[in-house]
Length: 390
Image 1: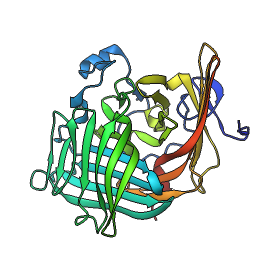
Image 2 (image 1 turned 90 degrees about the vertical axis):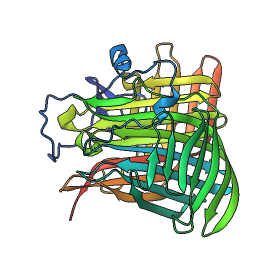
Image 3 (image 1 turned 60 degrees about the vertical axis):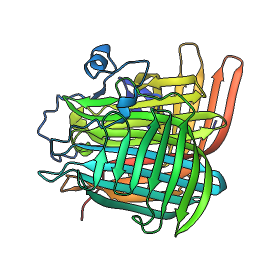
Image 4 (image 1 turned 180 degrees about the horizontal axis):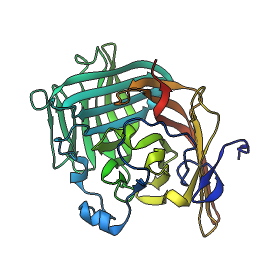
């Protein structure tokens, strides 16, 4: 294992522990930047995992349902938002990422956006975030399952949580797009209820396809190319702008030697308790090797991004009662393939989204079984208070 002695130590559940993404709770050390919150400092953010919360939300703890990937936001309150996301690491060095988003702004109709990112051999070819139109004239969103129609583009389930068809119209996106089918190869994943909650204000997450197989074609500058390989799809929504309750997050995913890995470390604002909730999910086909969160893990961050309190390099450590040890490292390798300011309600702070195409290394010791593999993966950084606005 590499020398991580220089990595930042943070307080985890009242004890000193190394920061290890995905395996342990990490507390943000940043001073609270008072933005726009009317809540008291007694508000305590947490990931809802108790049976009462699951029952209230109509969720089965052991079996995710197709309706969970349909519309989840009522769309009647200003500040509500939702997106359906997919990415793929493909043969010949292609990387594809798309998100179909919508949000409610004031008294205006719900607005639809498509976020499209295409890279080749670690170099960004295209990165566009475009408003497509409004509900119901230009976009249609289904409730019972994933079914999004944004003018000619669509993102829809064709077989429950098992298969999806995504089409991004190149004519709408300056000559770039794709037409692909994703077939799930692993169980769907939801950590607890999937809801990070602060007194009813929430950020929610559902991973319909932790690992999948993609086939289809990508269009770049009007030229079509057949593509195939591994893919991922998840779904986020919330009832307040994210910066109202969250400080930042790290997220990563990879398909490495028949293993599908999903990791995240979600950090609440200090006035929402300042808690960090990390998680790690590792699956091989239908066999779940790791499903851990919160105090079961530690998140270590490596070299900081210049001028930022977070990094493009992190490692997740898991230590179980049975002395099993797992390590998962996401190394962005400074290969930035997307970076842009994200919409925010803050008048003072800029929100910055950054994505890296790097390497993922997994070490798992399970009795006499040893797993050590490495391959390409994605690391995403969302920093809601990255720098002051000019």
